[in-house]
Length: 625
Image 1 (cartoon, rainbow, N blue to C red):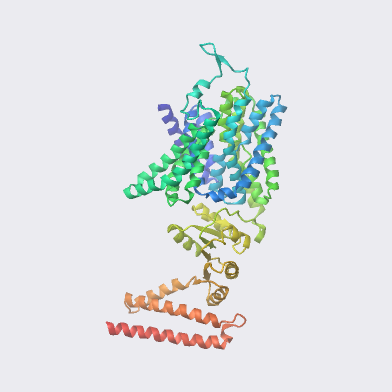
Image 2 (image 1 turned 45 degrees about the vertical axis):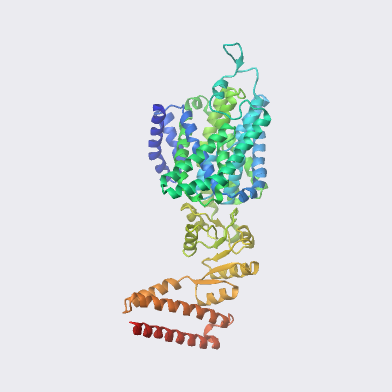
């Protein structure tokens, strides 16, 4: 226990120093964690390279990360991804496994070892890739979502891989004699008693039933048990109990998945999807997020500290060549598959560079394969270094992507590809500038789900850095509006900073959905009339309310009481709304306002009516006083 605490303390101290420096240099937090691990491990020797206990503990960061990702997805959105999960992800695993297998066969190993190595190295790093995509605001881009689909498929594929690898064992090697004269493989006894299992000793049909029962239990608890528990804690008014319950949910599900031989990360992801529609989703996210970040950081540090440079320096050319060769092979396969699935330009580059490494599940499968005598220890030691080195190189590939993006420049107009929208909501907000962001914050803070669209990529990226989800794309495009759920939405907010685009959006939405309630941002009176004729229900001039409030302050400091100023402000507001509606029916877009005689005459009459109404109100207030 003392050794565990010592290692954890040293790791955290190194992270406090290294990660802010890496972030300031624009290298990203992941590279900072990896460098911190290398410095305190192989370089300074403050901790040994035996970091397995702490690494198992830190792997809960990956589990929590997938739980949080599940909270962001609805079951319907996951179903919509099925083609990419099966096609994009499944094809990547199959082709990469075969390519690596052929390479290992060329090195002189038998086919069973080659196939096992291919499956292990086909997996990519869920922890590094998703963390970096989230930091850089790339998770909702088409390339980011494609990468996520492949990673999710890989996580699911770990389950059949664990079941299949023992079938590749070399039966005559690595066996040792037991005291009773029987033979066993090293590590079998320890592994068998390592943790409690619900499926050990059961027949095949029993294992299947228990496994399905565990998955059903996760779903049923998420639907029927979680909400009453949170309501009970809410009634107790103990804020710390929210955190305790969130941790119990994640750790409990992970433990249950371990007992039935499933991936803990997959189990918690499923639980997150089930809870995605829960009213307590935001509480779960805020409670789990700090633990996820801390444990993921520890995991990255253990990867860096676990690199055995002594083995690397014995044969650096071969091992570095294998690591770079793996990245090139996986990158080439990803590039071809990405093009086949119509990824282009930046999203194809992002998809290719982000998944070209080996992953943390490779450590798990490699350790399991060694215990099961599938892969010989000498090859396993080299593969361990190759996996760690490719993970260490991954942040540099993201930096290379950033450089390429800057060199490519921002395409103009429709040349830049829109994000893939994977959710719908009752409210669609088109435009998230200074006007739309206030509407969005008010709606979300009130528990109303929104889908945010904007045609300015920098604005979307800024939103993501502050934790708000948004999609890049032209809100006037019919395909983007349909993907955002125009057919089912209750309210559309047209808040773009381009008056012509606002009018165009309102006209199209009214034609497609006569029953839709449309709130539109107007820039001046002329734009109000355009939006009225286009079919907007509520038209809000962006400066009107602020100017009206400023006028009330003027009245309060010009001799009127606060009550009188408020009454006059309210009278002006209602009269102006009546005026706008009446003048909109007289407005002719083919004529300048000053040449429309009927419009000008009625405008003067309404202005006199306003003055008379305010004077009557003043007189009434004076008489009452």
